[in-house]
Length: 187
Image (cartoon, rainbow, N blue to C red; front, side, top):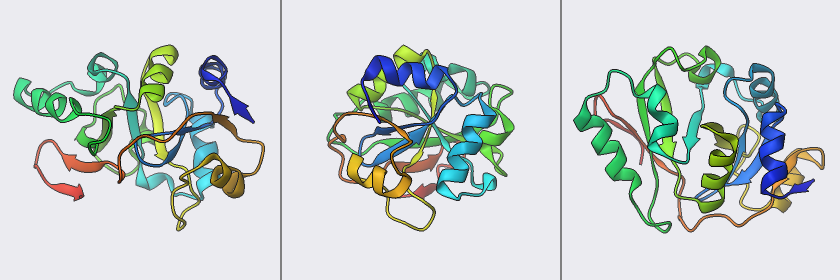
């Protein structure tokens, strides 16, 4: 079922899963503090909980609870990587866990993946929701991420709520880097 932005925000507040366009591929998201909604995403994707997921937000302020213990320089490095145009490739950062991160979000890892999105519609979604949301590629495990709402329907059927909108202008999913070690996990 295709939704507009206010309906999509309500879907998240109701503890339901939402498919939405991101910078390069479609994502599945929910309220990160709603374990039942999160488990629904894992079931849809046939994804093990141990893998963890990304949290995306509209602004640095929305992810501040996840930045405790980082240096000013580390936060500035992340912020600089997020000050990009819509065409540039986004960067997701792995940061040490804080008490603000539910255990199911990070899986078996001692880090959580976070990103401030450049996608205008997703920024509005996070702003309207009032915080970060779960973001994991919209595809069952082992299949290519969806690049259209038609592919979303093919993968998940008609029951999934879909925020209607275009994909972003990035040609590839976000790069993933560890803020502490500097290691690139996905280039």
